[in-house]
Length: 478
Image 1 (spheres, rainbow, N blue to C red):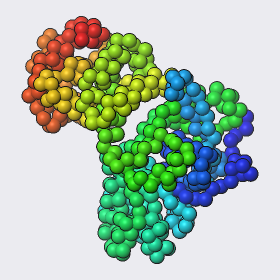
Image 2 (image 1 turned 90 degrees about the vertical axis):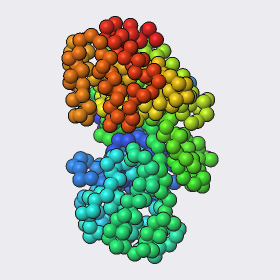
Image 3 (image 1 turned 45 degrees about the horizontal axis):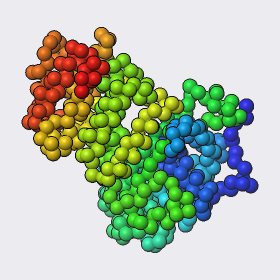
Image 4 (image 1 turned 135 degrees about the vertical axis):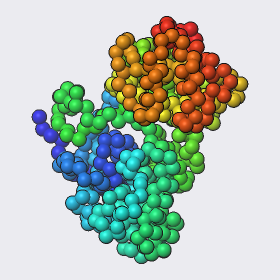
């Protein structure tokens, strides 16, 4: 079987290098590159991507396939149909290595066509290291590399205001655009660069905070032979992702025109305030995951898709989101309900095998950030604790007792949290005292949850029911 190695240059020539992308991983290729490729096909966006591998990793370059790869998009479409849509991505011009080809990386800054900088260097990528030096080639952190890159551009174009760049960091941290700009300015100060450079960073460049949403499962190694037989070619850079995607950009309105969204509307939203979208995603998508995991897992279920085939759990999850989470979020109800429906459809995706035990990592912390704000808001507004969120918290307590059908559960969380459960696991019978201590962990929760009306009694009742009746029977009592 032939490899997918080259593009048909008569049909797909290398486009002007308008985009520099720090990060060669699966997510950016199935998310950003896929979207840019659609814009290149359907509009006059006409932008080529140069990928920079920012870390010292030893694996083949995308250049071995002339920058071409396949994004396989699979899931439930807007009509509720199961779809599998391969797209050959031809918008990547080349890949450069920060470790080994750094001078070529810096030379990209001298390209007058360049307009965009995209990045995904993991949650730990936007960080500051005071040991990085200006003459390090390359320095260790992504923001330090970017500072050198921007300084080269500033000097080459004599600080021209029209040569600033639009920055779209996709790292999963709050206010990623602001954090990236602050860190670049911190390096400029550390290295005592021209003050006019710092002014140019602030006035000529646009740093946008973003929210990205798409499940990218990467190279489908368990299915690759069947997929290649269907394609009729081999692709060493094949990347699989779900059908759904959303890209929210906090930035100026002119980005709509810059991205040609009037010519080909993608699910990209340019907004003044990204916070409601983040709260929506964290509360509904991430919150639903956190709520379902202990309930489904202790019911003997192992994956998200299998969970969505259980009528009782689906009914529970629907009620939790409709009556307790959505009313606590600051967006239009219709928009939130539409998003909820899309989330539940994504959970049913037959192409994604998402293991509950993987999602369970650090679940106590996840509950605090994803669902506790809604629980507190509901309780304050109704003067009583919400029963579904309280049951989910009770199920989480039972999950951390560490047994499923008599077998040990492999738990992963902060050591001090796991140590709290050591004594509680030996409890036979009533868990009232333990639950009180659990809810009173002010250092973890940020406040003493026993002070919330009715929460302690509800969680205690549900914990004892789960322990004596079993998860499904306890849940049905709701």
